[in-house]
Length: 518
Image 1 (cartoon, rainbow, N blue to C red):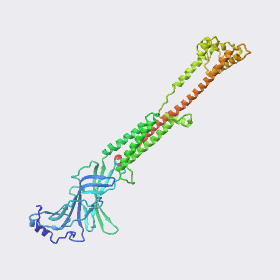
Image 2 (image 1 turned 90 degrees about the vertical axis):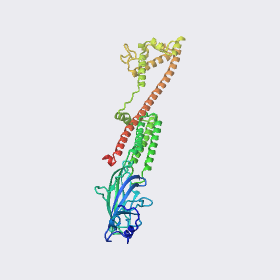
Image 3 (image 1 turned 135 degrees about the horizontal axis):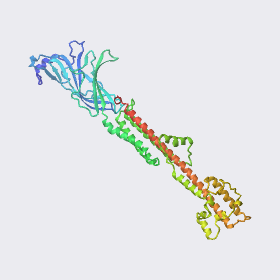
Image 4 (image 1 turned 60 degrees about the vertical axis):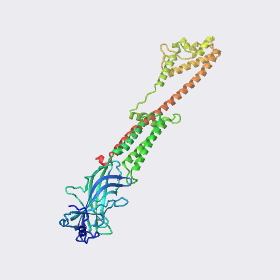
């Protein structure tokens, strides 16, 4: 029978000569055994920044007070009664040593249940805030081990023998029958350890019990909200290298935006982790690596921009640079440079044109006159002798040129394709003709021809200047294309290097946590 109401004779007999200030032992030299157990209800949260764990739990204390025993037959079969906490009977002053609560003792002062054999059960519930050293090295793939340290505040081990209460049939000292799983933390296991501490001031032992709670963070939230977006941002950094090298302003702006995005996520991570210098969180290392990759890639993009718009007239490409960026690296990166067909085709056309006129007698005077410009046609219209016909009217013997088979400009069968040698001989032929036509003593002297030859000489000089100018521009264009190709090679090389570095960093970072590596 359980007694709920007040019975004055029963309490008067039970509490006669009873003092709640006296420790309930028959021999003062013997310790009072107090057993303790924790019923974990819920993990409310873990504050990494303040390094505090908040739990909802019940505490169970069991001890025996020989002065509070009675015979149920004498009192209407009453087997148990209730006493309010801290009023009538003695109770141990067991507190949470590592409490972070403002009131320190956050337990609810519940009633004590006293049984007729003197056994007392006290189960005070409470919201416990305990200090917990948070190790953020592997955040967000981290395991945390927190504990609740309970012990008597004033009694030593010779007065109170604090023990762990193991229920029959169980080995765990933390009851999880009513535990509500947390959405952020996964409870791995629990453990209770009894310790005895000796202080310098006192030779007596001070027993304490630590209830360890081993937690593992659930990474789904951080994966979808931090890790996956940051990986996408990192991949966008690599995609930047696929943009054409000539569009460098867009590449630099894009990489700067990516860098700002990574810095934004890094700020979020720094707000979530405690400001400690003991360790750097894994997620912080990850974002720092991304920041480094984006910053260095931006630097190399600026370098590629420098090469792309480098002027060949001001910067000469040395042989070592040319060998590395125009020969060796393209071969290593499987890059093939497209040959310029326009210049080759232009040279081919020039060769054909020159080949058709390098032997005038093979082509014939009529063919040359048909290809003459409008000035020569106008001269023929006004009755002047054609300059070509005039030149060809000079006998070859007067020119003093040797006719050698295979060497002269006049051949019997076909024209020789040695362009340079033929051009030199052709120029000598023209010079001889001009000298004869300009000599008043010769029979071929003609004033109108001399005037025309002077104009042709001026045209020749202008054409020579234009030809040299075009050659210089062609050379400058080729050198400029070399710088552009070197910039393209460097851009492709950076893409491969940063891709390998990014993949290696991601694999190394996310395989380093112990439970992932295991």
